[in-house]
Image 1 (tube, rainbow, N blue to C red):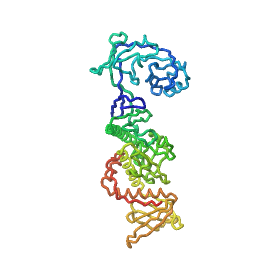
Image 2 (image 1 turned 180 degrees about the vertical axis):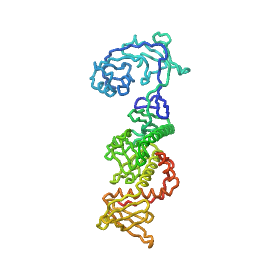
Image 3 (image 1 turned 30 degrees about the vertical axis):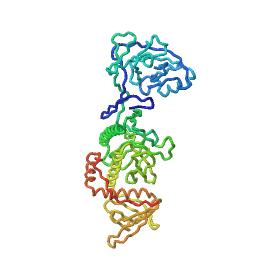
Image 4 (image 1 turned 90 degrees about the vertical axis):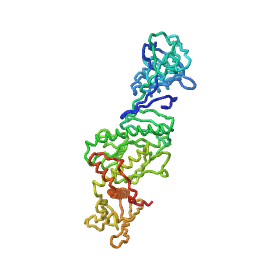
Length: 498
């Protein structure tokens, strides 16, 4: 397995219920006290290729010192750069100081007493080390010539160096040490290069809600990668469900959370290097919320980037021939204004969970409101069209409230629209069996179309015993059993004319 853009090295993953631990092998002094210089000042010159010939890790944001992790045999832990105290600097701030340091830089460095997990010691077959007190003054026990460990294949737990300065009881062991701890609640997975549709080969990264990243973890096979993806995604899902149950205790029945999770949204005006951005979607009560980060407090729910009424939007799972690019597991949401938003998730199971959750949220809201009325115009007269869960379609005069006509859902035999404002309904007369056309004009065409579709879907869902059973569970527990929701392929569909 590999991590980051550095040279590959072995790491080990440990998955617990609520945390992912990333470990790497390191060499630890387990007894005795090896010789270390405490502090030195060295001067190095910028190279034509490779800059100063060192790589740094750590920084104030990681709560660890800035240290030199890779070195070209001469360089060391940084305290001062050209007299500037960088002990409390963030990683990128130290990098910037080095970049602006000119052709020559004076470093004040110190050597750490213990070998930290974020430094990897070199191992070699032939031990020819020179004690650091006899070296040129520019070597370090933690870097290169100051400590060459002789690896004994017959004893993988203990490594020693015969030419190390005399120190009774000195012993080094090769151990797995924690490199990063990633809390999984509201963490997100990503197989894609950030912002793009390019999928990494057998690799992914995990990003915690506070921004801490695992780095890119690469696996030897696609099967191994998928197994880990699914295992981590399952733990994240379980934590999310548990968290939703706790949050729902503070919300009324009509404001319960049905779904929460990360997606990647395709940018409307995307540039080549930023096609997608991470977003957090939540289905709660009558609304779909889109956030840039998970809502934690009640106040956070009022600060969503956008919110939509679930029965006035349309969700579509994209098939292979509908995909916009190389991203898989995608769906679109058409808003009440007709705008299309495109999202992708990492796994097929996540796509299924989203689809079922959206169906459930829509069904519960239609069942709650029972009817919805929209203003419209028919033959130059102001009318009202009510979509009623029990009665079907009812058209009435806006002024007198007199009902002009009504039809059941089963009487709708077809429909079309002009994509702007007009819908033409084709109803079958129950007595004569003839088709009667009704054309209405709306100011919010897409909201009306989506609402009618939502009522049709909810009506059909009521005929499905499994769906009704899961809906009953949802109202009593506050969180639906999404896996028990079924899709009915016979759901009537409106025809959209362009």
